[in-house]
Image (cartoon, rainbow, N blue to C red):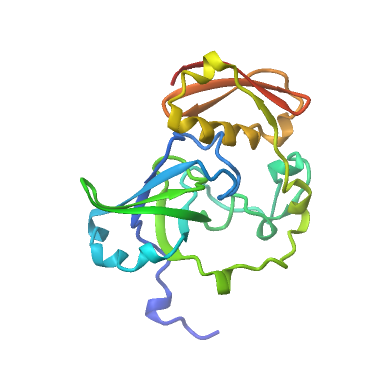
Length: 235
């Protein structure tokens, strides 16, 4: 095999931005982008990339691709198979047939909706996006526009993921507890809870679980397809 050229040897990428979201940990995040449109984030660029010219024309696109780092899933080595949580954590699938964070390279891909471009924030130009599936502080490597004529394939097959595509829980959120959540964030929290934050292998666990969201600790139980919020405390 021919010796690679010098510019082909580079295997490092620069972090161009970080995203700010209401999830300080990955537990509770939707497992895919776009599942909960009400979940919002703000993309803040690193000082080197705060040139407004880098965003010229981006406001004309409704959706963006984010290429980011699974910063909480970096590990030495890799496995050719993983156990997707949505399949109960008991079925091994090929890593390249899944979107598992445990990959040879810890790279994630999300399609988000661009809500607005704020050009004069204290952090320079920032992007406000919706439908996120990233925890607070996630490093972003690149941003690209979503193109309907190239990226949309309605005829595409979902493979084994089709079995769990429409999975959602009913959420019971008592009024006195819901009142403790800031009104603009209530729909986002309920949407995230509907996606069932629990690991697949603990679906039969009756004990309470907790999600950290927007400075709150939201405690809940699940029984028979119904998630009931039991308690809210300051996170």
